[in-house]
Image 1 (cartoon, rainbow, N blue to C red):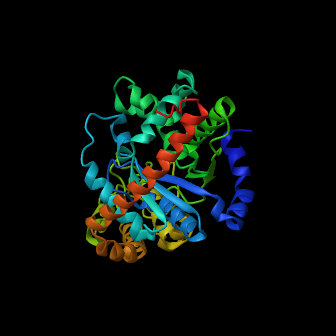
Image 2: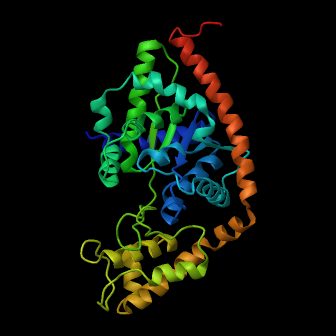
Image 3: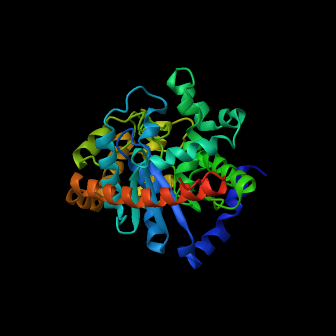
Length: 346
């Protein structure tokens, strides 16, 4: 049984257990602030965070700024990206009184956990990680040490707060498996300190981008949450489709059309085939009109809330979260040192 199948088989009992005892769980999730968040982030992760917070699960959101430089020379507009990401999360319904937002670089104890964690994994295990391989290939540069150890950075992010749940899609399960490996090996070698976290596979749809490829900040093919209605309409008008009048859902042969159908259908709560049937022979112009209306209607309330949340509000939430996260990280690091026999008392 592969990892995804095995993890998926645990989802029904795990979700029942979370509903019965939310206070026994802590979630670690996060954003890599390489650009503005888009509609795929909202459906893929943010709304799941809101549901779990509402269920009573303590939530930690890391703004993983150090991870921005794993595959690039400059972090770019990282400060602005962090603030905008927090604004989007707050607008979606996350409450800074119940959710801890923190930046990786503000918690030095996280990086002190890296050394013992790195001693628990092999180079071969790190090189097998699909994200490491994909990002190294995309960067076009030699594999750097920071990118190679990226999965262990994520393990530190999850384990410092003793996270028990990590909401993920199928593509990110290998990171959770690495964290599970680190937690088990540390506990076996030094004594029980860490829970072994579970990947919480989301059932949210994975939205393709406007060009039919995976929606990605690096591809620039997404509808960002901070866009105005006019900017959204322009982005959708520019999307490439085809000349066939009859609209049909065919991701292989007609990826651009399928991408727009999926986006409209997700916002409308329908199947892409149903949206295609409604449009019929209306062609690309009608498809784009329907998609624009669906997206703008769906995001209208989010955008109104977002407009009321200032960058200063986001910064206040981060400062409070950094303080809370650092307290927890210091406690965890003390436990790790004691377990390893490195708590000297001087």
